Image 1: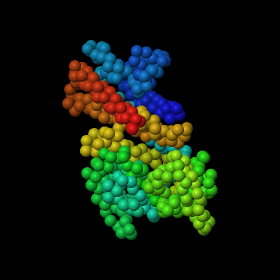
Image 2: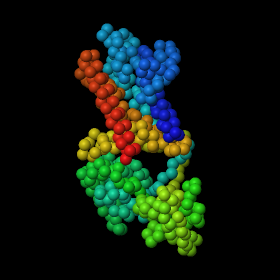
Image 3: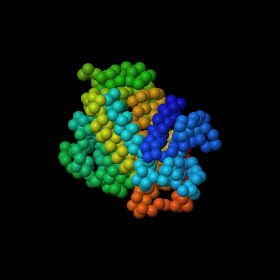
Length: 440
């Protein structure tokens, strides 16, 4: 329930501000805005009130929102009055460059919003990061990483010549899988080498990414107890903060890895023997695992992590860099969806997938981080050149600017209808994939 509330609140903020981008630019050029709605008001509205010439309201169908600008065919498909000469307050009466600005107003607001949110997150919470130089035990890789040619213990130095200063799992994975990285410089067994990234292997990894265990890449962190989750079995049976776990039964555990997590789950409902190092002494603890195979131990990252804070003014350039990285990362993922070789279309999701990205309990840091990411997603998806989306309308206005000719309504309406059909097909497909994953 809390996940659903967070998702609804986040999307409501984003939709209202996205539509405000269209609203304010339309008003700036003297256009009449007839409606401004959060959610669709098909047949009826939950709430509506007219202020000046604009009717503001709340629809009942939670599928985005819209602004109805006079002289423009939008999601409402209302083409009434378009067969008469344009009036000065109508969008169709404005020059193409002004219509282009109005069409891109929502996307610009979404990007600016993401920048502002990331800046305020950095100002309020600071940032925890891992310098690459602290990760002297290298990294571990899942099956996908191994397919690309990585070996557990590799120390990553740079990607395409760009030195890796900090460990950022999303940006590293994105650079390799979605942004066309050609090579990775690394140290393996004490020797420097260059790993060439094979595009065919990348496509295969993306195609099968849902079947791999754990993350593509994760740092090798010594398994030292840093804390416990509520109700931890490990704490209940004698583990203490600062203990270093060296063996689980007869399995050596130099690092807390995906392999260890998998082994613990395989021992569900069994009693395991932990060998630990405490204050220089070796001890053994017997712990009966429950059906989920979790110890409830949080590994310590004090040795590896550092923190930095930002003043109000410092937060904005840092927030801009964060926004740029996340935009590049998501755009790289979108490109794989439309590349049949990657099979990226099989991993598309919608409301259920997005909802699962929010935590089961309220966390403002996660909420605003997710809202910033969703704002970038909304901006990029709206830029796709589909007639019913902002990108499609912007492309039409740009075409008019280049050719000097306006598309007639008899062509615009079929394009809009085709675009709506494509959008509904994508919506049905994405939600259908969500439902299939639930049943699987």
